[in-house]
Length: 264
Ligand SMILES: [Zn+2]
Figure 1 (cartoon, rainbow, N blue to C red):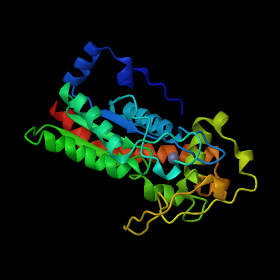
Figure 2 (figure 1 turned 60 degrees about the vertical axis):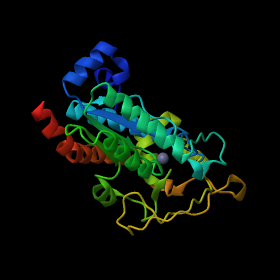
Figure 3 (figure 1 turned 90 degrees about the vertical axis):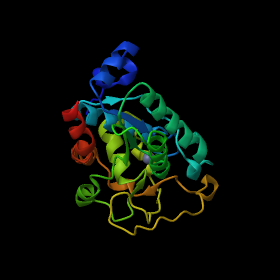
């Protein structure tokens, strides 16, 4: 699961290489993440790391480029936990719009916002819409948005060990993925005695289409900054989840990337 992928990182190119990539009509993936508390056992940058790593694994399969990630996200939920660095929803969305506008200004015609932090998702949808609206006469421009777990959700749900509600934030899914990618940063022993709540918005289980928003958790109430069940996580599960996630993304982006590459 090593993902260095030198040639797929936009940031590793020179500006003249970037012109060539634009002329080759490469899809540019913009990973969007967060720096926020993920329980006593996972690193603060889990979301950014996962979005970028999955973007690179996807890029390798489809010949895309990966822009440097938007590392800070909309993390108001975990604002009272130390180490969380959050942008306001307005600032976050504006950053994403301006990153996209820079790419469009350079001539890139296919942009995929690949999200790794659930609350960023709705902002990314609006950002994609704003950018395409600003260039509504450009019939060749397409800006797409997806959260990395969405295309493979039902397949991941089939593979799960946790009960529904166990794959929210810092639970079975993310803990397994971090065990597969960066085991040295996962502190399972710190979960001893921690009983995190399950969530009503499990990332991959079929559920209600209604999204509801409520009170924020606080460390002084003993909340561990986990929503889900990390106790059943494993490295092997993380490797399986990643394969499913990337396979499903390859299939999901074929429509925006495949037809585009053929036309180029
Ligand atoms: Zn996360």
